Amino acid sequence: MGGTHFADDDLAHEATGDGDVGRRDVGKMEHGCEHYRRRCKIVAPCCKEVFPCRHCHNDATALGDRHNICRQDVEKVVCVLCDTEQPVSQVCVRCGVNMGEYFCDVCKFYDDDTEKGQYHCHDCGICRVGGKENYFHCAKCGML
Image 1 (tube, rainbow, N blue to C red):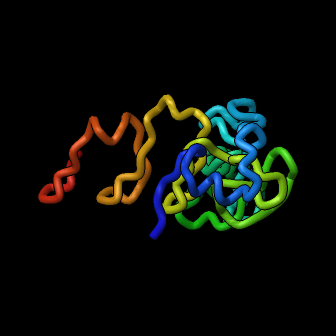
Image 2 (cartoon, rainbow, N blue to C red):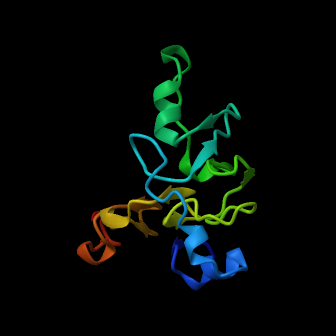
């Protein structure tokens, strides 16, 4: 079952195979767009074009062709450090860098700025900010 991961998780350590923590942090907080700091770009599933994030894609589409990417539909990303297109995962298959300090494989979401307190809310089906410990999701009414 999918979920969220932070770069210091054992999963990220095992994924690189070399245990090179310094390598995983190369370029952290140096790349991204106005919406997110991350070390990958997404391949839009609708048009196969590369964008820094789904919001950048949605903002770039012409008014007559305006459409939004469903975050869960993203299947491919491109590492900004080595330019390798690959399936969604936290660690680049070629250079071994973490493409996002925070990563959610449900939402296909990456972010290096963990000060936001990101977490995946399984009841909402999306990632939220503000820290899971600060919220209670009511299963009865569906409200936070």
